[in-house]
Amino acid sequence: IRKLIVPAVASSVIPIQVILQVGVGKIVKADFPSRFPNFVEQVAGYLNSADFREFHGALLCLYSLVQVYEHKTNDKGPLPQAMSGLLPLIHQRMITMLPDTSDESLTLQKLVLKVFYRYTDFFLPASSINEQWVTEWHGLLCTVLENFNGVNDDGDSVYWKRQKWAA
Image (cartoon, rainbow, N blue to C red):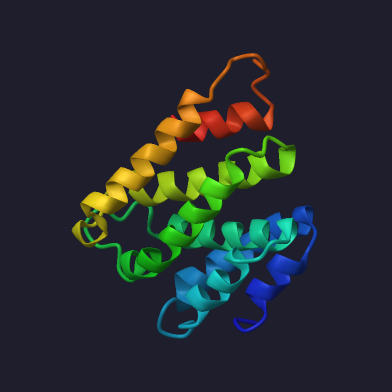
């Protein structure tokens, strides 16, 4: 199952991805990193995908990983090491998606921001902090918030959801 769960999420339609995400979270909680050492590499492979569904699935898998450690304030375990390689990937993808305001792009941007928020919410490991990292993410968040136009004030729109996670 560990060998196939990430590819299954990445290749499934969105409603099935959401269902499989629950399984990913359970597997990651029980098996990462000792019995599932290639999880990060599997996710990273799909984070580089140009296909919306594969990238969406990879972000859901990454979100599951971050959720496992989100309330641990003193010890994030292997998460900082995993995120040190994945955060630059999703940051770069987010930069390239910013000009695109399609619903698909906004959905992916919202997921990137959710992952970042969950990772940094309760405790930011000192090993994750450096001036370049903070500057890059701060600039990205400022860019998202500067582009807020308030034209679409529908709280259910993907645009508003992206703005909420950026704020």
